[in-house]
Length: 251
Image (tube, rainbow, N blue to C red; front, top):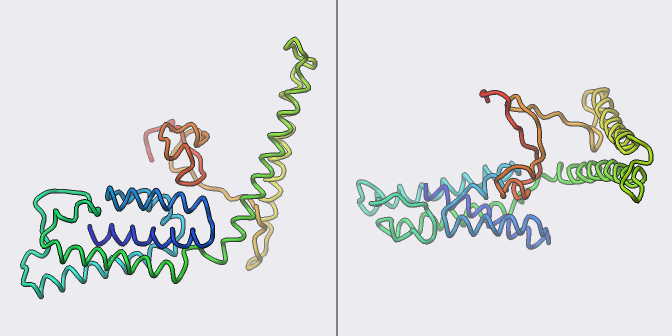
């Protein structure tokens, strides 16, 4: 557990180093919070869900660090003649603050340091982003944002022109009609992208911003992520997404 956690934190430290060097403000903030939660609290979820599972290059390198820590513990226990290896008398989260809870402290400290450093160095050397996907993903996000901005702007304009100073509608239903037209335009653009994707020949590159369908894990209604009561997910710390308000009891 200690070797795995510190390898996880080491990989996050590698991402933080690269984010500082690349002046990536968003990733720098995410990695800083995740690393603090890990080293001081032994909590790995911010690193896992906020960074590692989003970038598949990280996990194999993190496992090499984990292997390093495990080998140090195993071989060190044999050399020191410890039949039970490293032991502890209480369940604690593996962080910097709980290192004294493990016996012998020295061997445990060397093992988790090895796991941390190896994972960090491997991530720094190899990077954590997939070079082939970095630019298309960025362009696709920009396209989606522009579509949303156009639709939202049209809806706002409709609301503005459909109301008079007294609050009455100048043209009953005008706001809904124009907003619906804006939504239809955005939907049409998405459908066009989907059609382009469907007609692509095998081996041809997919257009940036093409519609991607993601299956829901359960029946229900999709709602905005900002409606989720968990502030971490609602604030977008773990990345963009949607939530599902379930109508059944099967996932």
